[in-house]
Each structure stands twice: as structure tokens, then as C-alpha cells.
Length: 239
Ligand SMILES: O=C(O)c1cc(=O)[nH]c(=O)n1[C@@H]1O[C@H](COP(=O)(O)O)[C@@H](O)[C@H]1O
Image (cartoon, rainbow, N blue to C red; front, side, top):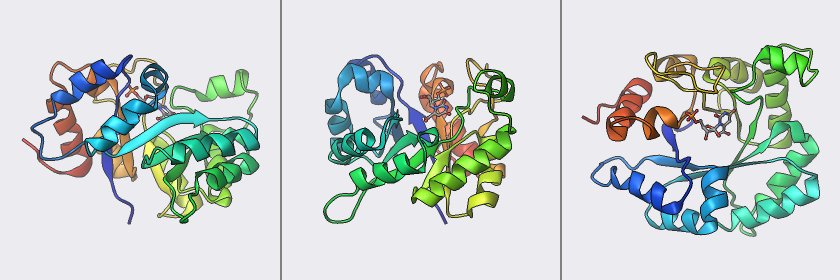
């Protein structure tokens, strides 16, 4: 069975802001799994990744690569050297691009970080997909197909909304991982997310990892919000 965890999206504009946020978690028994996305990586560079690895955090480096296969392969080789735990690409880059990503990511000793593919962003509605991207298939069929492509390329799983976790498992098997942003507590606002649900429902549908940003980072008490996610998603009481 896949490991399950809550990943905090550290979407901050500087290393200092991120480290100040993480200071709030310094007395926690459970070290949170962290996601570093474009904002923090572009602001603080690889150094913030090294610093957080040195502090013992697991890191999902979310740079959503999407380019020609050769470029993705070479970029992945660089990211692999950062010793992160998980990285991602856009499945829309094709099976060839995803295969190149794995090649670049695989180190000389055969090890590599987990590689997952974004299917359709959780901010995309079926209407936007149809009218702007000219994809006529349903969201569910599109996600199942992109997940199958990712599996065929040899990836470990996909990013999708928690609402689609069970259909990905049906299409690709239980071991194929589902990493699911688009998490909101029933009493929090959706912001720019469209395909959302709460941590308890994500657990019920079968997500392996939930990715939670603003409901934790913008909360009055981020540690309490993290505990709430862990309790609802993992049934572990940290209080
Ligand atoms: O790849 C991702 O992590 C991702 C894919 C996706 O489809 N939707 C999505 O929201 N994300 C990321 O997940 C995080 C969600 O943040 P919040 O909306 O603040 O919880 C952000 O850092 C997004 O970049």
C-alpha cells in the first residue's frame, strides 16, 4: 500500500517567509511533508531545497515541467541532484516527454525521486477545458486517459483532484499514486480552486497524499489547521 500523508504547500515569496512559517512547527513530533512550488523556488532557488532537506523535511518539488523531451530530460537531471523526494511534469507533454523525464531523473545507481504527472489542474473546470482547451472528453475521461499515459511512461502516479482519486485507481491500479490538491475545509473559501473537497472526503475517496496550501498557510493558527488535516485525512490525533 502507498504511504499516505498531508503535504503543506509552502507558497511563499522568500526563504525567510518560509522559514518563519516553519518555525511555528518546530515543536511538532510529526515533521510535515513540504511542497516547494514555483513561487518559492524562483525566489529562493535550489538553496532553500538544500536547507529544508538538511533540516530533515521530505520535499515535493513542484515545478510542473512541460517542454520538449530533451529539455525536460536535462532539467530533470539537475533536479535529481537536489535529492528531493518527489517531482512532477505535465502529462500533457506526452508519453515521450514523460519517458524522457524518467531518464533524466534516474541516477547512476538506479535510484530516483518519485515522478508524478499533473492531469488537469484543479483550477480547471470542464467548461474551461471544453471551451478554451478544445478538449471534448469529460474531465473524468481526460484524467483517466492522462493517468494511463503516465503509467505507460513508467511514472509513479498523478496529480488530480481528490474527487478523481478513485477513478485513477480504477484506470491504473491501487498502487498508482494519487496526489491531490484542491483541498478545502467545509468552512473555508475555494479561492481559485474549482474541483475541491475536504480532507475527510479525500480519505474516503482514496487519495494517497493531500496537498494543502492556503487552508494551512493563511490560517490564524497554521499548526492547528495542519493538525485538523492530519486528523481528518490520516485519523491521527496530534493535539
Ligand atoms: O501540482 C500541484 O501541486 C498542483 C496541481 C493542481 O492541479 N492544483 C494545485 O493547486 N496544485 C498546487 O497545490 C497547491 C494548492 O494550494 P492551495 O490552493 O493554497 O491549497 C498550490 O501550490 C498549487 O500550485
